[in-house]
Length: 433
Image 1 (cartoon, rainbow, N blue to C red):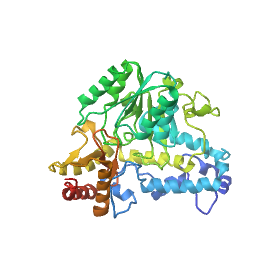
Image 2: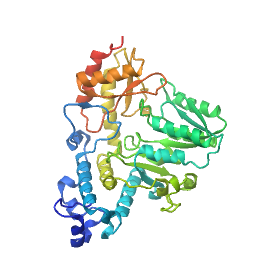
Image 3: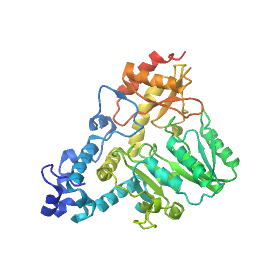
Image 4: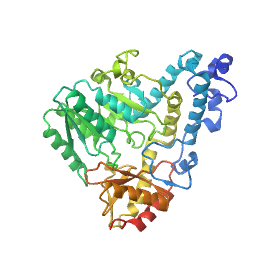
């Protein structure tokens, strides 16, 4: 992305040097060491790439991802740029592609490269929830009386969207409980059972990585199971993309939504929607969005002003992702997760809520303490960990077997953070006994 001096307006720069305004990297950007994405970043050096509060052991990185310094600086520069140019930039008046249309195309191209899909199958959304809500609410093949399935580990906002189909489109809403403790076999059996019990099933909401417990589901197998019964699947990949090492083709799903501001570490307010090209006609355009051709996937996103600077920064975030490497990111996040889980296995009062099978977990892992029964208990534990030990986690409700506390290491964490959690749990594991 183009870098502009804070003392020079975008318009003046455009008149002086149109080439400097191209959406691709300018010579000024690539020649500045502080503004250039490294070709390779070793995971041991990742903490140096971030500016975080050193007084807190932050193990709640599931809400959104901390931007590395490079992305944060890029975002700040683009914020100034967009503010300086105002509607000159947004109305596509600048030469060389330095405009709203060029910025959106560059962001889509970057994400398409990241997940391995055609750019024409991908649209930028305001969040993962925004993307998934559009897929769910605008799923055209649904008829009154058709059934839509979800489970207790799906995300609250997505369950609400599914329930909306019941209230407004006459769908039969069917829910089930994910088995706990889970295994690959009993997860698959649970989905097979609910599909068998729901002959009018038409649509299935499937979460790749649960925001509640961290359980990773075998998406490809479940998608195939549903497809064999004529059931479409909408996949919530908010905690999978850029956290686990895979491409969209590995899921074989027709409809996927996720948050770019989570594990890709783009600025807040960025998400993405994928629709397989052959299925585009099955997702209605958003609110009769007639300004965009109906044959474009981008018509499935509501019209409205977006955070242009955030969109412009996506390419830098994707470059940073590739500089680490998807496989290296996954190994690093797993190592941080295993660091605390392995050290609390001897504590009889700590219940880990995901199986030991590496295929069934990633960085997110939730736990309960024996005797922790209520939401108030889970909130008390969260406060205790933070106030007494400066360890930040988050409690999660909605799990059938009871509330949990979620632990989510981030890329910038060192072993100090999981070790601090271990020390706290060794002192507090009898809190509710």
